[in-house]
Length: 359
Image (cartoon, rainbow, N blue to C red; front, side, top):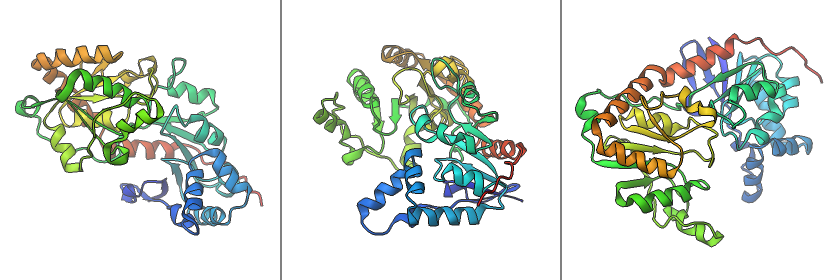
């Protein structure tokens, strides 16, 4: 059985087929002294500049964490930084020469130059969750330009998706027109405010928004457009129950222009039998995930999204046909165990790092 560090997702720790997965939580190493200082150092782990500062300043807690990490995984087969990379590349290169090392690009394009590219030279390969990156490149091509020879697309299915019997009533008996479930990020709130203004109670918005759901109001203090409604969070059971009543699951990504594509919601909506209505990715990369018009519907802008909402609410047979096809595509190609197995098998097929230990 191959030993794998899968950083940092304790939910997948333990035996998985031919692999033994584990992680090392860095947070306990920094929870000492003043709380503000602890928060600052924990935040520093998520960016290359912060990691470099901790390393060069010889922060004792950081060095203790790094030492324990190297000790724990020196003889591992794989080290996969699946959320962010907390280790300085010089440590990775010189003190962990044995394991095959994989860097995850998981919050791009916003983190590409802060916690992606600066580390690439110390890794053997990379995975990416978004097939799209920019108007110039799909992600695989961008990685090649950045010097990464080995790359793997990892669909962002973070947990086993629910299983349902695909009956006609399952797809057709739904009484909520449109649902969006997600966080309060940047200009998403501006777009949601416009959609809510046009759709009213037909659009339900939920998520873990800051300030007890009032983050949309407080944007006005910064001179930004207000989302004038409180947004309530949902438990896992409540989210599932709502999706099962939903005709159209609305999706949007953080970028205003077509860039990244393939967030968790993109798989979650069709897995519950709702029609996925999503914004587009760069260079039509969304079409790598679902066939447009057959397995999901994609919009160009808010006006287009509104037109398509009205159309598919008024044409239930077409809506159900697309929702069913998206549901079947998720079940066929985007099961949690299958995509995780694919990542681990691909990483295992790469050559190990050259042994370049320096002391």
